Length: 87
Image 1 (cartoon, rainbow, N blue to C red):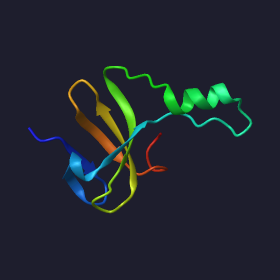
Image 2: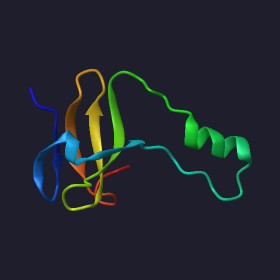
Image 3: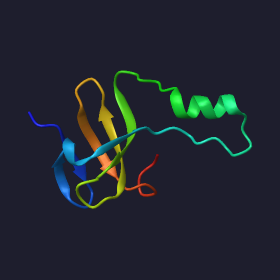
Image 4: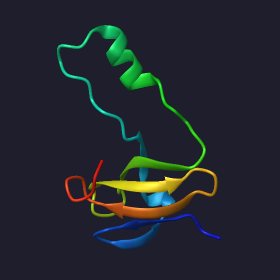
């Protein structure tokens, strides 16, 4: 079974057209201390189950999208544009 990602603009495409951007996490404010920023850049939950993620369609429309993926099966459950779906 192929690992497909549904781009809201281009439709279903192979995962190799995309670049993984990581889990969706809240960005700290600019006034936060260095340890908070280190956690933001390097600490990830990496939990089994559904996870909100950033994906970049590098070989297609060259846009960032949000996806919900089941990390145990790699099934993409939903996708959408930032601002149109809850991050």
